[in-house]
Image (cartoon, rainbow, N blue to C red; front, side):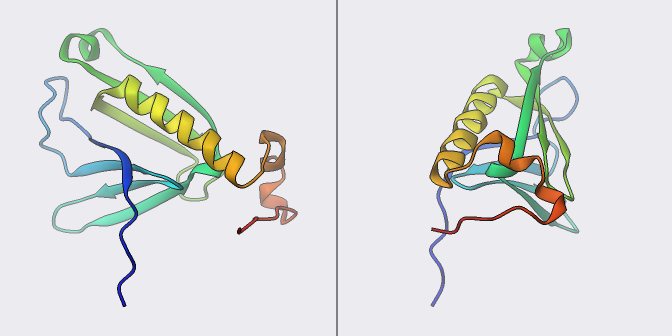
Length: 131
């Protein structure tokens, strides 16, 4: 039996250049427990960052991005494949930033985690609570 698809909270597509044209094949999907990055057209790849592994975020907009209504969200995590994920040239960038921030806090509360518990994640002392 097929597993029901997890609903997403927010979805943004990377835009091309400063014009804001969605001619790229990169889509960022925020779900309840993870941030999913889908890339590619001929060869597709999917990567994900579990929300509780996100340790910090930043938000920035250049003058060109401001003119075309775009922005950049940088996500810093304890993920092996994406320790620094730059979500560049997306529309609704501030909303995306706020949504990821809120989802990270909700997931940490769900798992009963504090920020300090992520410090030793690579040492093997990390315990993943699966309720």
